Length: 339
Image 1: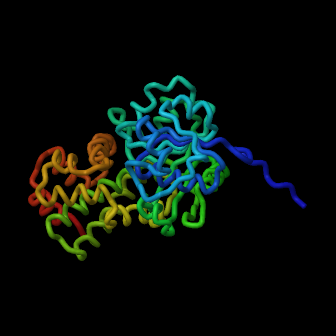
Image 2: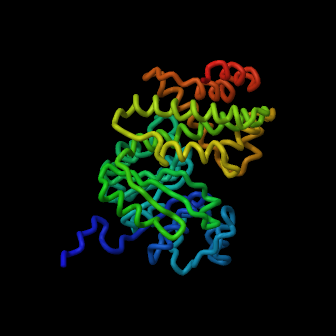
Image 3: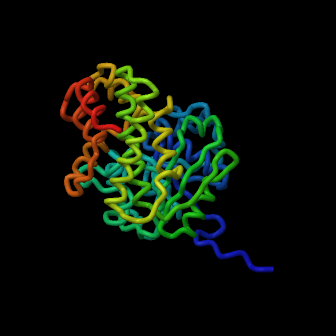
């Protein structure tokens, strides 16, 4: 009988989770199907105490009941990093730098998985690049989780699929096993750049979908919009990171579809509010969660100044959000460019 292959992470890696929003809470639910103990960074000490008392996240996905005896909570990110071998980072991209600002423990010898669907502000780096260049994490140890998957459906244990990307595919398989359970199926990829950029872009496309929905455009138009959206995503990722990839696979097209159409999509909701006449500030104030596409739109626009990829949908969203152009006018102009 052949010996089992030696695992890169070992039989029982110590797993940490940084973040306590809805997606982080959903990933915690997946992880606790597979690990005996989870080191979980929750920024608010008050929320930690409430979590321990009730067994539920007091702010997000409150229907999920956790066995708190399997969780080591800490409001100190250094504690989580120090006591974990594998670390899942699940915070909004706009807050990544502030979360790690107080970190004195090195990430260089850790295995880090990003479940962040946004770009680092100012630098406009994808998270994987930032983890490598700024935090010193080895590139072949960085994992990226991509959808299609909404946290709310994970809470309901509705069957969902995720893709785990890592340049080391064997390691991607081990990362994937940590989140695979009876309601989560996984596949692996070596395309960390393409999956990250596609995850960023689909949020912009979902805002566009929401704007048109808010303006009263119907399903016939939405089908054309999203058909053009996946072509726009393909043009961009193929230009920025030209490797063979199947843009029709779940990590790209599937993630776009669920974000553009789902009732749970915060980016579509944000766009719908803009289409209905809300100002950007008013829409942001009314939403309880961050719409990553708001930040991503400006970042992608800046990045594309270098590449000059035709991106009419992204330009439309940018003009509405940052140029303060009327959604009615901007969307009418876009309809003339779609085919």
